[in-house]
Length: 533
Image (cartoon, rainbow, N blue to C red; front, side):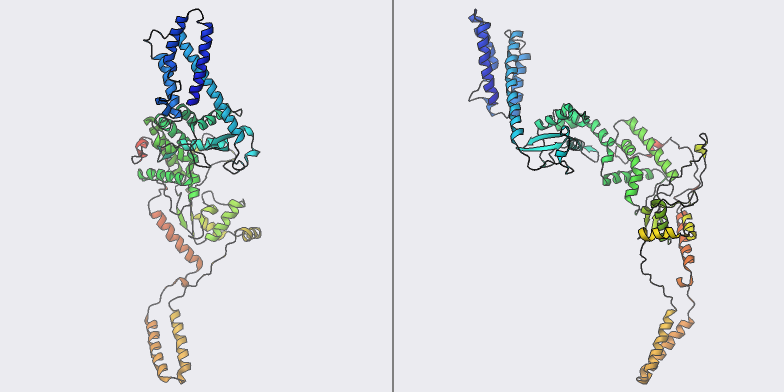
């Protein structure tokens, strides 16, 4: 502020000298009148000891000097002494002062950028050396007396992340900070970044949020109050940048809301279903779900609710068993066969309606596999366009792969591949012992007591009596059916039959559903969220 007043005083003296020599050398009274009028304006910027403006900060002083200029140019229409010549003289004096002080600021910045040094070798946020990057993509910034160099794309990413910050889709923009010291950028740094992006020769697109932030004079409160719609739209359009935890949270909410409004079309996901597979399959529906839940306009809410409902019903129709857990005792061979088919690309002759799970959906620890998304596209060498959507597919057989595995014989080449890449060490198996083995143990005890009969007759008599009683009790008992009486194939088949019988009795899957068209009469109310909109 003192620099501005000193320059202003010097410019005022020069202006008076020119006016005295050219305009008023013949009429001194007119010069005195003009000087008295201009002094009303200049007295606000003449250095004095006891001035209120001396205690102003530099930001407040900038507002003060432009307020004074605007007051004399526009708000004194009732004053007769203010004419166009007077306004032109005020503007000339003020603009010359501003031009000189801005030149000093630029000279100061040039000196700072030439004298300041980097703390270390400049790197981007991926720790790549910026010296290897093209100079048109790097920008230098001085903050807290330290010189920093940034890759402009890193700064754009930081700017978008800060301005689009949200919590449960309540917008809460944050200050744009330096990633190396976590200090917010000042306004002059933000202006430098803005004009670097705008004037760059590489034609980088200006981020919409940063452009609106610039129009708000880098005021977060004004930016948030006047750009709610743009911020939420940007968040939804860039939902692919969410972390996996947030994506899965929205996906589980979407499935829960979808299942709560219907009984027929329900997507049941087992708790042990791999989350990375679920995220990969359900992520294409995430953007539609966010638009159906957080859009501002009512017509858009209705539109995207209907779209999402139809998409999820179509998904359920094509994947009725998606997310189910199937327990199998042939899991090891199933894993080998799946690895050969999906990883090694070995062609297998399988029925069209038999489901072979990929290796990532097979859990060897839990002795089960999960039903994923099935691609049963009806492509043929001679397609029929008119009848393509009318082809009838047989229902998916999720248990047919067990029969295929039992009858499948691995070739020598396949066995070699399995041993080299996918061999699983078998755990030690504990044999099941039947109840009748107790009699054999008792008989051995009798023989041992008979051997020691010569040493202790009394003990042998007591032992023989107790053992004879136990033998009689075993003889009188009814025969027991144990797992040892069944062969391994019979035991496997028994467990599978019990499992599938329970699966088809739960009533959650209706195989008789062959509807080709969706009813849209109630889709608007079907996908109403629980007060989230």
